[in-house]
Image 1 (cartoon, rainbow, N blue to C red):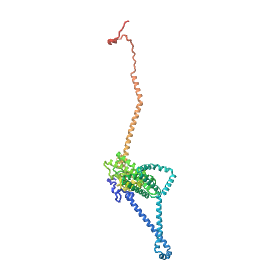
Image 2: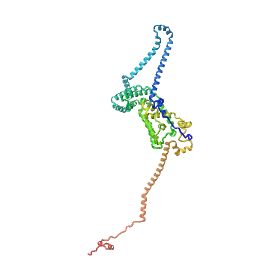
Image 3: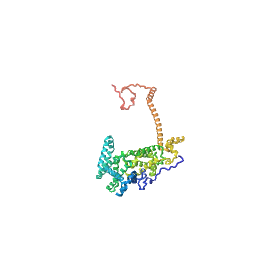
Image 4: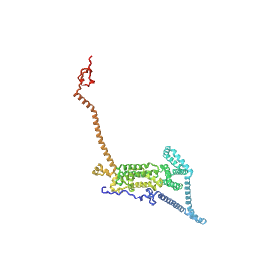
Length: 512
């Protein structure tokens, strides 16, 4: 590794993040590099072509079946055919296709009847009854679901009150759509996504005509509609059983665990975690990307991604003392994802892709950050030795756990790493840990010295009374106390010292 001092880093052109059709919107790996608008058009085109191919195959099979039937009764058909052709010209050609036309007409009639029943009031009432019966069988689940959605429903109703008549119509359409979706639980994830996106598009078109082109008002209403709809549909459409989202989640988590040895230097991330402000932003970014899984609404999940990305930009800006660039952002985002190992990452990405308001994913900072997250997840899945500028042998040893890039196998490098310099050069987290251990060691030494001084002071305090008592006893023994006795004389007794008193105080003797 010492011979390869220059690292290429991770670089993605901004043009690679845009839609491959050249519409100018952000693309998505889940949509084969297309934006949501172009993907829907492509999906509908492919779906229509598939329907046409199915009809063509059905007609072909019908013709083959009729031909086989005709060949098995060839003799009888040949005897009666001339007479029928003379009496009814063209009847033979129409008779062979009559059964197929009849079956095709019946199939179309059945589909139309099914669709009419699906949207009829009676079917809605039946669906409501089935839903109520299902809820009645499990009251605890019903109470739990009600607890999660009651507040959202109240907020939605309060918001619609400000719209007056349009608000009542929006609520009516949302309720009807939820009833419709309750009977489509067996559909695949793509079909459910198509239903939700069609509802978004139809409602948005009607709102644009109502608000006369005010995109801000339309976006505000659509955000509330998305919150109301997806909160109620979350349990049935997030990571559905008929998809492989759960397997992808497990594979991604195992992949990130296996890449635990990847250092910040290998990804050429422009962040110095030894700076307290940078370390704080890194922790916040990890918290936000993990918190994404706890949200139910696609818009709230996107908000977590946006906050995470802004913390990353702040960490880069503090480290470089200049505004961060797009080339700095993607490697840092990959590093954050590797450190966080977010739960159900693939399921959350697919959920946002399928059910988020498409306008949010095509433009704006939410769409940009989400596109970068998809790129980061795809890079982690395909990460190899060349991506990290390692040899294949080194990469395999690190992946298998036989070696670690933080400590080489030689004794000299190990001792160098233990000294602290090697740790600081490989991983700032280990460098911080080593610094903290040194501080703890110093604090332990100071605590031991303080305890010794405290014990010495305690011993001195215990011996101090005896020492003072002994010193007092020695002084009294060396200088014993002598009590001098004095004679008390009367005030008029002869006293030679009275001569020294001033005249007013000189005592006078009276003869008596």
